[in-house]
Amino acid sequence: MVNNLKIAQLFANGNTSGRTENLYIEGNTIYSYGPHFPVARRTQHTYKRQPVFSFNDRDYSATTRRHKSLVYRALVLNGAFVVFVPNANLLPAEAETMIKYHTGKIKDYKNSYDNARTEHYKGVWSGRIDSAREQIKFLKSFLKKN
Image (cartoon, rainbow, N blue to C red; front, side):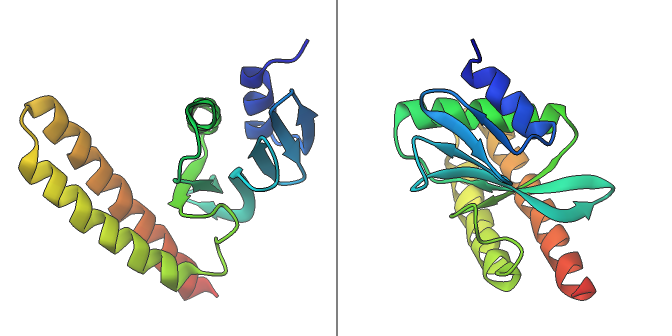
């Protein structure tokens, strides 16, 4: 029997179909519970020789958060470059919108960093700032190519 971890790994490895009761791959997208919640979408782009995936950064439920965690780990372990978006279907058509989105996220993360009470959480927010900056670099390079 296939479990959610296996479905996440299959998606990260390029499979275009696979299913459990509540996590499934359909084409280039993996969904949690149904078409209303795309977790991630495989794009046709690369960044620094890594395949690019758009990844939904919104949450829906505790189970969907677990699905997202499985998919994210599988993608990263497989060498993917993950771009966080408010809807997994936005990239790359909305690159300019996504730059504004990540610029806003950096402001939020800096505020959280400034209010962090421990070095551990300062490190967490610092990592998110770095990740958002790298995603902006990708999006700008995408715009230059297109």
